[in-house]
Amino acid sequence: MNTNKNRVATRFAPETRFELRPAPPAPFRANLESNFEQLKNRLLAEHLAGNEQPGLNAALRRAANEAAALAWVTRYPLLVFPALFEEKTAAAVRQAERQARIYADSRELVAA
Image (cartoon, rainbow, N blue to C red; front, side, top):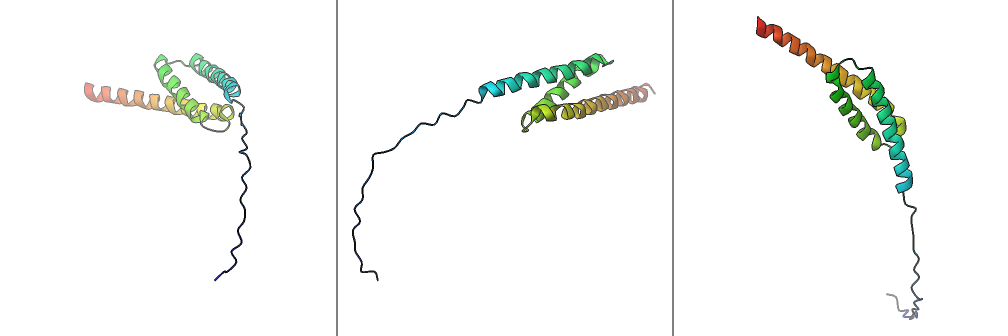
């Protein structure tokens, strides 16, 4: 058992306070958002201009929005978005072509 019972005087200094003011991320983020929207609109306009099927417009817009949502949660959305956009639009075109084939085949079955 410890028999040393030395008392240590406690001294408290006045409370020290300081204020942290982090740099607001809004200006950079706003700039990034506008650049991102410009890129999205430019790529979408190029695809819509080259589109021969007006029924695909909604699917291409939806694909652009999905790609934008996925790209925005990454660390470098401006870098990732074009590749995601290409993948999503290609998938939308394939889906529309598949639906058109199924529709044509079902019309033939109904007519027979």
